[in-house]
Length: 89
Image (tube, rainbow, N blue to C red; front, top):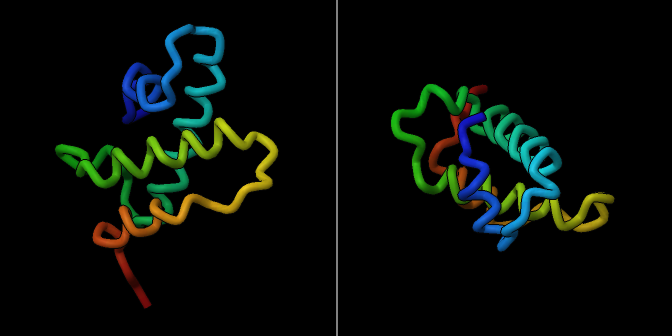
């Protein structure tokens, strides 16, 4: 896991530990999806670009708040990741 649980919880404005396991799972899902989207393992970034960190936090927030998957994907995430996406044909 690349993202810091405490930083993600601060973004979500969560101060207790009740959902730590759930949030950790959402972080892992978001990081995996973003790595696939940009075409690069996030561990290969040194340091992690701030746009990718923000995309992770936004995606985790969306996954956490909408656990049923009814809401559309956060539009800003694609914009934050655009410059880091590896294109191939």
